[in-house]
Length: 450
Image (cartoon, rainbow, N blue to C red; front, side):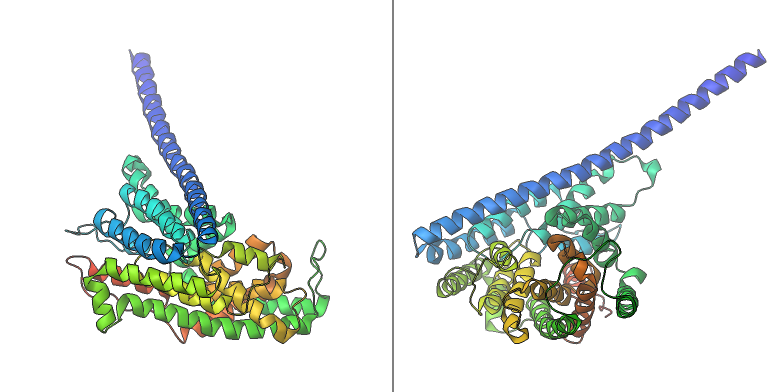
């Protein structure tokens, strides 16, 4: 009798253990499936955006008047669709994910900023906006797409796993950045530095400073050779130092101004034009589209789209873009953002940085091989806009295989970000705080700590 009871107890324990294992593996499979889904959606978004951009480029090359019609009407249609069917899909997507992480557990009337509906609208309307010629990217929106998908699977995970919703949002957003740029390390650092700002984010400047100073000291004492060899960079240490200093100064000021204008446009813009945008957003978007089309015609179309082709041509020394590419792209991206379209600024910011580097090359006598200067300015401008220096330099380093330039990339990112902080509040946290404040029943936005 006693042995039979022991056997029943052992069988009961084994069943409980198997059930626990089943729950754990069910949760893992659901999570892994969500992560794979983020990658697939990022690929779909990229392919659709490139296809739409290619169609627009072909049409604009055949019919010079096409942007004057398609860009205003397309912009108006995209804003109408967003406000009618996909509320919450407008803008970059990163502030929406950050705002949802601040969502109270009991928030009556909260308008969702992450959902399966928003995934559909973000991809469809975001690609459509690029296909109308607006200077927007898909990388920031992919963060919202990834966070939305992970948010949707939260209810499918076993409660016994104790996985918090915010952890899934961080994972989804970071997976979106990694998949969009094909930069896995940058995705990890984006999760730490941008989406889970805390001690890690406040210490990012200290971390980079320590690495830069230690690295420079080691190079001064042991030479510039890497542990397993060296990748050739044109110019000596003095040339690189000048390039870092000039890039940080120019990109820090330009990126800080860019971020400040975006923050003002979203939070404190006042006047007749701002009032018109509030009352007639569709007509305002059409006006923005007309401005972009006129700017595109004046610049032979170099401001249309994300700027990927122009940036790649500059990096490969296969393009002869005019000096006004960077400034014109700066203006076109601001106009597209103010229009209220779904779209991000990561790719346009990198192209603006490349344009600034192209303009600075003659000052440093690097017109023959400007690759180093272009990479520095890309990292510097992106760091100044986002005030996320670690993510910025790692994104550029992974994209251009620039490990041999890592000390310079870290230095220019840190300096540019620090200079930007003197000009503008942090872009994404400030926009997220404004979104939270606009939710029903929520108080004023919390002040942003620099």
